[in-house]
Image (tube, rainbow, N blue to C red; front, side, top):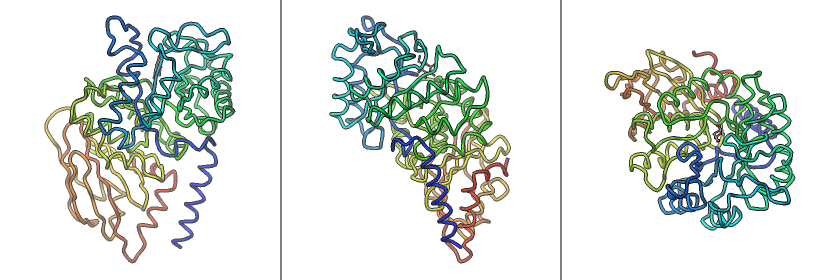
Length: 432
Ligand code: GLA
């Protein structure tokens, strides 16, 4: 029985893998840094030279990504967002970087980033203009894809402003084909579903075939309200979006804003825990040159990163709402499970969440026993547990407890049975 289950599971992973964009990239959620939320469209290098969108910003981020341990834990892509180009294409119709702010051009910047062992991301738009009013790529997909490949770009974030909504699918697919034609491995980050939702439910299997990740919901802001809204949107649409995620193609809930101004430390822990559970791309938008040590420690927490990067690449889902707690679960390799319990109260002090079969149906994997590790709010080995032990975790208002649960094999093979149940894409429907 066990090997039949394993074979079926392998087949399922294989079928999912062949259905994704066939560029061999993003087999795990992309990790890196993206300028938008923190630096936006600041092009005023005269009065704000340290924070304006210029080659210096990306070179400095690349330097610090290596020197301060970011690269070592997996952050790899240094990504340019909007407002980098000149308002004019060159005489061959190619995009060019703003000559004042990028005097050495993007190719030299890519060489610099590569010399640090990192990768470079860039931004463009499938319509007539970028959202910030710079030249769009409509009518230039092949030229722009080739230009990015010639420069040595490793990721393209392709926005959807100023485009006829009915042509979104065609545009995103054509750019995917154009990128593939260049022969360079370029991670393709789309905003296709975000722009398509107001029209109709997007075709996620087409999106997964064209893109390596895709934004579904609105732009993240530096606030708890924004993070909560994205989580709520994700949970509300999980039946549609969770089953499509997997190696090669991921739902993108937008940037991590940890290390900025708007989130308390507990809220930063919640964003990190939930982005790990959602198998989200971990693209930080903050100032790595000046970041508080606690935020840095959180973003570099290897146990949380390992949950996000787990090789089976399953996105987690919200499985319960109990007494103003939310429970989210992500299946991990080896039949393990990651659990995030968020305290939704924004009043009072820490509240205890009792981990029982009633509050947490997948606690069944603790039959006959399991090993529990608390990853957040602090690392703690909680030891061997059974179905009936009384485990209570304390969680601060708007904070999250993140646990991993490892079943200890018994005679009755129940964990394999449950593993099989959880691999069924509809299993999350039963609990809410
Ligand atoms: C849109 C995107 C953002 C950012 C801006 C840039 O709003 O969703 O992530 O790229 O455009 O103008």
